[in-house]
Length: 627
Image: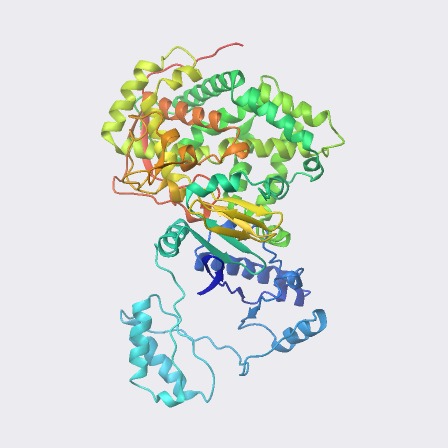
C-alpha cells in the first residue's frame, strides 16, 4: 500500500497487481480443447483476483483486461507479472517479442519440470507428515522449489517453524504464502466500510488504467449527482447485459419518451392498475400451489424459493399479459445466476467461453419475448413501450424489442426476489413484528378485493419493516465516469480533482450502516421508520440535514429507479399474502444466512444460501376480476 499526495489532502491508493496463471495460452495454442481449458483458468484467476482484493465485481467496469486482444491498451505504467507452472517459457518469450513492442525481463532463475507428490498416509497430523515429505524432497534433489499446500495460516507458520529447525538454512529459503482471506475479509462491503474508518471519507483504488475514487460521506453525494461531468454507464448496461443494439442510445428523444412512459404508468394511475394485476396473478399462483397438495399437508421449501414462486409468474403476467412464463423460467434463472459476471463488463471472449449457457438463455428469453409481443391483457406500460420501439425502426434494431422486454423483466424481478426474502426472513423471526404486521394486514387488506396502492399505503408497519430490510440488504454501488477533468468541493471545503476517464463510486450501504444516521444499524428494527414517517426526509448527519440522500437503495435524482413504486408494491403484496394465508415453520432456527458476496455492488444482495422452511395454506379463494 502506498500513499500519493493530491493537494490539499491525502488520498489512499491500493496498487493492484494482476497475476495471471497460464493466461496467454489462449493465443499460443491452436488446439480448441486446450484453449478452452486455459480460458477456464483465466476466469478462475479473475475470480480469485476479485476475491483476494475484496473488491465488488463491478469495480472492473471499463477495465481493459482483455488479456490477449488488448494487452497494449493497459496503463503505460502497469507492469504485468506472468507466473505459470505450465507455460512453455521459450514460446512465451517469443510471443511477447513478436506480437508486442514492450519491454520484458526475466526474473533470475530457471524453469523446471513439475512433479506432484501426495501424502500416502492417512494421519491426523498431516502437517508433520508434510514437513517430513518436504525435507525428504529437499535432501534428495539438487536444485528447485518446493510448494507445500496447507489449509490455514497457523498450520503454515507451524510448518515453517518445524522445517527451519530441521534443515541447514544456508541451503534453502523458507517463505510463507498465505493465499486465503478470513471470512470477514471476503465480504466486499466490509472492505469499503473498513477503508472509510481507516482512511477517511475519501479514498482511491488505483486500477491499471484508471483510478476509482470512493466518496463515502453522503453530504458530498449531491455534489456528484449535480455535476453533469459525471455520467452513469446506463448504455453499457443495456448493450452488454441484455444484448441491445447501441444505436438507440444516440438519440436524446428516446430518454424523453421513456421518462414519460415511466411517469405515466409506473408512478401514477397506471401503477394502481399494474399493482392490482400483480395481486390477482399472485393469488392465482398461490391457488395453484395450494391445489398441488392436500389440505393440512406441509410442504418443504426454501424461503427464497418461495419468494420466487410467489413473484415470478405474477410479475411476468402483470407486465406482459397472457404469456406463459413458466415455460422459460429455467432460462431466466440461468441468466440471473450469472448476472454478476455480466455486470462486471468483462471481455467478450470470457462470456463466450465461460457463460455460454447464460448467453444461450439470454438469447432464448429475448426470442420468446420477440415472438410474444402485444399479448392479451398486457400492461399499458408494455403496450406503449413496444409501440415506441416499433414506431422508430430508425432507432431500434429488429431484435431490440425482445432485449428490452428481457431487461424490463429482470429490472422488475432481479432485486425484488432477494428483497422479499430478507423482508420475510426478518419479519418471521421477530415475533412482535410478526404479530403487529399480521394484525395490521387483517385490518387493512380485505380478503375479497384486489388490493390497491391506497390500501397498501395504510400498512405502515409492513412498509417500515420492508424499508428496514431494504436498508440492511441494499448493496448497490453507483459508478459514475468522468467526462473531463473535474474539480469538486467537498462539504468540508476540501478540493478534489477527478481526471477524465476515472470513476467515482458512491456506496449507499456506507450511509445505511452509519450509526449516526441509523442507531444500532446492524440490528433489524421493524418499526425504525414507523414513529417518524418523515424520517428519511429529515435525516441529519452531525446536525447537518442531508435528507433522503442518506437512503439510496433505488438511486437518486434523474437516475432513480423508475420502477421502485411497483417493486415496493410487489414486496408488500407478496409479504402480506404469505403472512395472511400461510402457516410456516423454520426447519433450523439457528440457520442465519449472510449476504452473498457475488451480488454485492449490483443491488439487493441475495442470501449466500436459502433458508429451509415448511409451510401450509390457510383457507382462501383465488379472485378473478374482469377489466
